[in-house]
Length: 408
Ligand code: GLY
Image 1: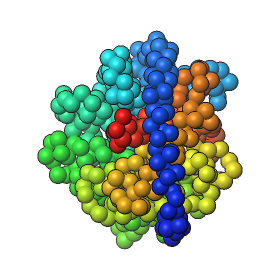
Image 2: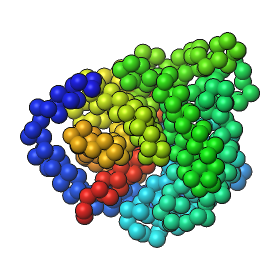
Image 3: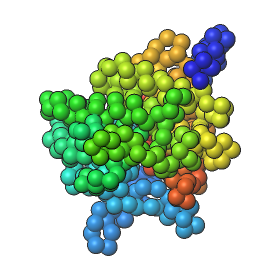
Image 4: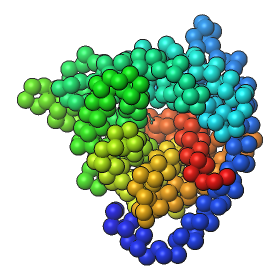
């Protein structure tokens, strides 16, 4: 795969012109996309606000669109402990960053504040997604230390899922379960919370846990070609400790193929771990997992992957494309040179596709979510070819990363 990428770079002297044209095209699209995205999220917020609490007063957050299930144009509201609860507030924060509009700041704040109790939720690894996309963005964008204690408290909660004898965070399952210890590549995303909490608090343990988990995952969770497994079950028995006792397909097609969003989480996770630690092993590994995706023979020409790399011709997953684009823009800067330029060009191509009518919604065609054609969990027959709140979030993040890298 790496050889293919290097060969493409070598013969592509004229690519520079095409790349500059694509960059100019995306730059020219940005303001229209942010204007339309703002209108969509104003409509979503208006529809969701009356549903903010269920009949018993429990808080809920927009997660997606129920048409795939009920055939009706209905918002899918989920409890605050669902893994995506940070993405809708996070998108509102990103729209505040994009537009400067006070409306988005105030609505982002209102939805974010609902999530406070999640800081103590230890049921899975996802509190990084929930709390960092919401409170983490509030902290970053408002440049405030008001949320520091809460983020450190959240990191403490996540750290309780770390098992020192394995050097891993248990992604799913009860921490007392001695028969199974399940880990998924999505978990890499939640290490950002630990890294930031380590810097805020000065507690090196969070950093050590994040590095331990990222390193063990790098050693065990990928095939020789850089493709990821979804679920690994680690053995905890003395004598077998740390060996992989089972591989499960999880949300992917099979144990022999790579689930696209899992691959994107891995690219993002290792690029982020390099940003936070400057350990070159993570930078090298981010490139390896990125090269698998970019150079895969089943990758479509527009750069938006099928939902699994082993399922060419089936549904695309726009969320996997959005996460990958955001990750590649960051990775491109770290790598630099011709290879960095190739990562950036790939991300720009993906963003142009996502911002086109093929993916970017018009009017209320998908209940005002931004991106069409996401796949949540195909083997579970759940959320196939539908908008997903996290697809929108990483699309907006990628557009902002692009905007920050060009002069407007
Ligand atoms: N973390 C779950 C997913 O990516 O669907």
